[in-house]
Structure formats: C-alpha cells, structure tokens
Length: 112
Image (cartoon, rainbow, N blue to C red; front, side, top):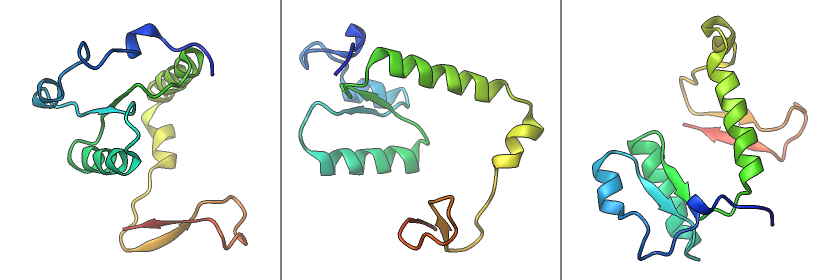
C-alpha cells in the first residue's frame, strides 16, 4: 500500500476529539470505520457548511500527499488572471460533460 505518515495513524483513544476540532471550525472525517454512507454524508455536510474538511486514516501514501500538496502550492502561486481562466459559474441546473469527449453520453456531472 505504501508508506503512511505516522502522524496520520492514531489509536482512536489518542486521536483528536471531533467536538474540539469542529468547535474550531474544521470538520474532521475519520475513514477508519467501515460506514461509507456516513463518510459520504459527513463529507457532503462539511463541503456544504464549511467548504473544507480534514480527512484522517485515509491510507494515502505520504509521497502521494506530498505531490498533491506541491501541486496545490503551485496552483495558489499562479497569477489571478490565469486562475480565472478556470473559473465558471453555472447559473442554472445543467449537465456538464465529465469527459473531454463531447460525444461521450455516459459520463456527465449534474450541477445545481
């Protein structure tokens, strides 16, 4: 599976308390449980109400996380006019193709 940063592997009794983290405004989502439907609702709620969240016990290798963090840093250092090229607002319910092939009728994303 790869190397996981030990800081992200915690015994539940020593891990952060959800109430404390949420009180500070950052929802914490622990993927160590097998209840996937609960994870989905937690992610949806955090996305809707906070706009961001922290995921722990996800099993993603440390090297992969470092690459993602590096890409995010590069993105945020780009000039605003370059980032605005990728900004769009959907004003009404629409289907946006999730595939670069415009004839692909199978992959679509519903935007509301």
